[in-house]
Image 1 (spheres, rainbow, N blue to C red):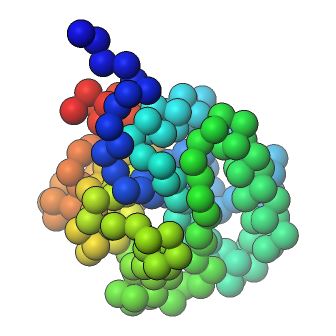
Image 2 (image 1 turned 90 degrees about the vertical axis):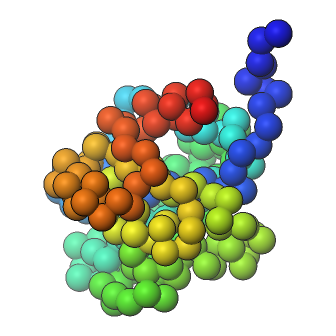
Length: 190
Ligand SMILES: [Mg+2]
């Protein structure tokens, strides 16, 4: 008997996605306009795959450029609106986009690897973080997830190659994948 994808049992309370370098290209380290925001060609297909595993998507993104002035809040909000509308068209269960707007670092801070954004999601939506998944392209993404007992997937897109050695050495990723699509296919096959 084949397994219908739609019948699949929900595996994760939530899936947390980093934004830049994970679902969209990150060529310069920050994005300050809609026209600079480009999904990877495979991202939407990957997100559809992931949506069969959870009812809760979150995006958790460090946007300290808001503090330094290279990013304007109204531009970030336009990008957020676009993401929400694109996700909605595909019935992707995006609940909220959290962004850290400062460079302030610390265990409980919003900026990853601080756990602030995750704790807000946990409280706001009743998420069991230990049964959730974090996906990103930096060491900070992985460390934040591990601090909370989450499952973590590290991607080699974005800044992935730069952090690969550290991620391996410190063993903060449960899975290392070429990109978001291969990650979704690997998780679906588990
Ligand atoms: Mg990133």
